[in-house]
Length: 241
Image 1 (cartoon, rainbow, N blue to C red):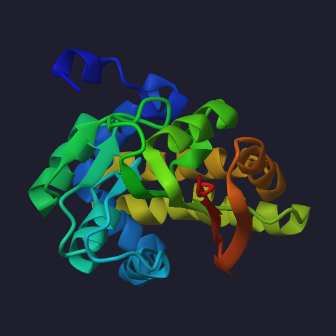
Image 2: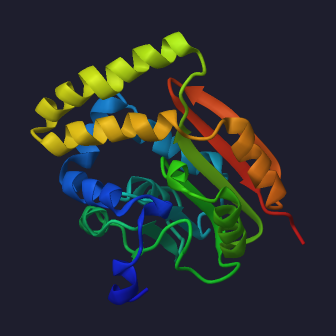
């Protein structure tokens, strides 16, 4: 994707102001993510890639890759792969991914994944599917780039349905968390991201609706798995033709 097209890419259908926020926090994003996850972020990235059970030369695309952490894990655990692609709409996030060592970083989003048809053995995404405006269109794009038998894993934060739990989490994330993490990261933008983080996960679709959309898009073996805390994952596979 050329630079002119990259300028028009917005974050998975979100308001451009969201991408500007991610641009502002890009240099501190890994630190913030590590603090939020209590140091477990490397564990679940490793777990995600290994759970795909791919051959060492498999191709993979990471959509909404941010600073490229999942793509880096894929490079480590798929050492013979000739195509591991990190895709993100944020220029600053892409720059951080390149600096971190991701070999192939491209501008794009769920609405436009810049890889060839039927070219990927797997697709992963960490905390990006909640920005999709139209799930059916996004999953059609995922089907386009995955080979027959290709595997899909979408990591996402899911808020409990209990009103009491939601109120507590809103205070911890949007209230207390926004102040604490802003100080810990030395960035006002980190606090703004925490408030946005709550708004985005609390308004996201229920797991059942995402599973239904994946099935309607032609994926097989679709399931939602609770991982722990707020973390869950959607898994699916493209039919073998």
